[in-house]
Amino acid sequence: SIFTIVAGARPNFMKIAPIIHAFQNQQKAGVDVQFRLVHTGQHYDKKMSGDFFDQLNIPEPNANLGGGGGTQAEQTAAIMVAFEKELMEHRPDLVIVVGDVTSTLACSIAAKKLQIDVAHVEGGIRSGDLSMPEEINRMVTDSITDHFFTTSEIANANLRKAGVSEEKIHFVGNTMIDTLMDQMPNFRKPEGEIFENLTPGNYFVMTMHRPANVDQEQSLKAMIDAILEGTGGLPIFFPVHPRTAKNLQNLGIQAPNLHLCEPLGYLEFNYLVKNAKGVITDSGGVTEETSVMNVPCVTLRNNTERAETIHMGTNELVGTDPKKLKPYLEKIMKGEWKQYQGIPLWDGKTAQRIVDILIKTYD
Ligand code: UDP
Image 1 (cartoon, rainbow, N blue to C red):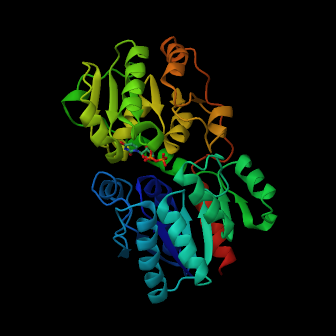
Image 2: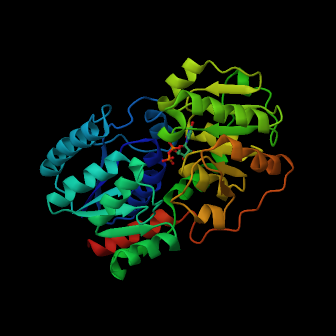
């Protein structure tokens, strides 16, 4: 059988890497299975894409659709047009999409309209917040998905509530955590002067890229001011997402302990996270990684599609109001944070489960 695997943006690469490796292991064992890797080009610069291929051992894509840039609709349309062509030239038995980015949505629609089955890795999660493009991507993708590979019981429950039949729901765990566990021995301190004197356990890491936090200069400033105030002068490392860069530059915020840098490689970023006193973020994936690494994490959002990181992990939802941040940071500073309880099936073996199911189903 032939499977086409789609990846487009930074948070996709760590989710596909272990699936590809599991397919490669099957091939090595003599199983007759082929895959094509399609990069939609949604993220195309080296720091948001190429570096992850090198670090995570992902092979060169078989096709690159060049679908980056533009508005939500322009990007969705460009990827759909190019992916339809790809599918007509190389028709697979199944298309595998991951996560919740524009590529996930565009490619699942293009595949399903050609009557090709769709598997959604990380299906079923919901924030309920339709002001975020990711939630729309999840809902539309899941409405036409044939095989849901889920990360949590909450996702399973969401799907059941939506009337998805039981045999389509495969509770397998989290491929992002496969990558985390696999790569942990390779984590390495980032290069550069700002990192030279870092003391493990004595600094914060922050990331911000959600429109609600970064598109308005004044609210971005208010949040950074609140973070500076609550972290007692400890160093803060802030790898800046391209979306955030322009407004941050305009604001010209400077503080001796605030260290801005370009987006980091996976191994460098997670070295910083693993050794941090705490993490402040509006990312989804980062809250999963901090949980498993037992690092305190506060999320600058009003909701999350990953509630298990709050119930069983180290994540707390603070919201987007900077005034709410202080008590959370105080708790981290005092070392009074909850511990990771373990999350079922986040054990590093998820991709193997997925590939076993797919090979059996498409024998
Ligand atoms: N990440 C990284 N370098 C960075 C920031 C994040 O490698 O400078 C990784 C992080 O470890 C996680 C993923 O990127 O695996 C999260 O991506 P992002 O926050 O862009 O997306 P989200 O999870 O919010 O969709």
